[in-house]
Image (cartoon, rainbow, N blue to C red):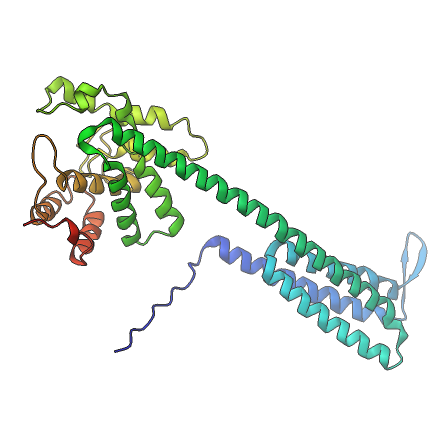
Length: 337
């Protein structure tokens, strides 16, 4: 049986609609200018400007220049689409002008010359723009790669501080990625959420080692100190100006959907989406990992706990995504006897 490939259409956004409208308006303006140029070039009438009598035919060059400028705008603002549109239009114009000259209409020579200049200008502008964009893209990619490598390094440092949860940040980030994808987020958002999840426990850097690595149960006072790590994480990450939402995971991943979490006691959708996702991913990793005070839980027990805490600790939408992943076998390698 042949599987039908799902075709994903591009999302219709206000920005995309405005871009299409702009493209249509520029094309309309081009054809209006070209039509005016054609009409004025054959006119025998005169017009007056500051008491000077001038032939209407002299306006043909003005309209022709405007139409060429419109084509340049298409190339600058619409890159490949604008470039190919301009090339087709200019090729058609050159064909018509050449045909007229071959039929002994030498008046088309100046227009042909202007059109060829426009064609060369558009080729040079497009080539230069693409070169600049390629350089910018390379620099952007280098910056993204550098940022990601720094975040990865911080995650290793965070996990290295707590000997009982080594690899926790990476696993939570991976589960966050899976949940975000299941929820239908785009690739850029998924990567952003992954990075935020990697640093969700960065505030533990400020928690004393003897508390983090204590083999037994924490005292009430010690637990209160541990509970300060979301605020400590916020204090560290708020200094990152280029990614302001990087703080959301660290600051809010212990909030509860019913508003009984900490540190801000936010509820429902007032909790940032990434923090709600990390909350499920973090709890899942905690339950599926061995800790000094208990062994890891069987997968069936974890699933029951996620279901029981839906609507209180966890966002129902994210719990549903987790349970769907479970049913699809995404966590099969974690199942225990």
